[in-house]
Image (cartoon, rainbow, N blue to C red):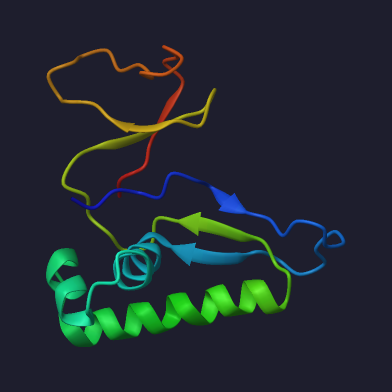
Length: 125
């Protein structure tokens, strides 16, 4: 199951205030990076898991690695952005506590499972 990252971004620790804009890491780039480098799947296994072709995976993965390298070398922040993904379930972000979660459609009234807030924003495209 594809899901959005559990963070909005990262900032370099111990570096002067960034002068450059943050690097934008798309959700699909995060997924490719996660499956290939964190879970150590082969590219063939990762692209099957993501439901995309091998060439599309290679392009997304290369972009993710370039962006991660740029952020590290240039001490730039990283922010996440939806990009061009479709999730199996509806995902929400709580504007009060930043929890990301899914909630089944049968519930008419949506609320955050962590803080019970109803100040929510849909994450899916």
